[in-house]
Length: 120
Image (cartoon, rainbow, N blue to C red; front, side):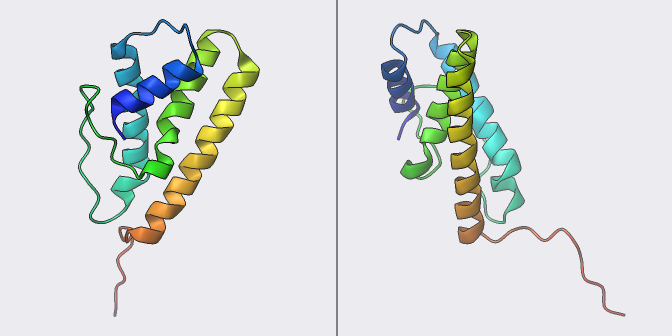
């Protein structure tokens, strides 16, 4: 799925939202940085962080987890519109999907070893 697909999905869910491409890219990059710092970088063999710069960039998570970006963007739109209930619901969906993605990633990638075992 591409960045443009996510933005299209968000605009379809919240018709009439007047946010720029720059806003969407900034928030998608912020979400990707959060995922990268807290999940991917804690495992061996993860990809390097790089920002998305255009609508044709491909999101680096499996398709069943790309709604992470959608829920976070929709939540931001809702909180900017003063709709706290919708914001809360979308952040719950985001956090649940983020947790599921973290569990999936941990099952499929070896975590980095933080402690060294010393034999005496």
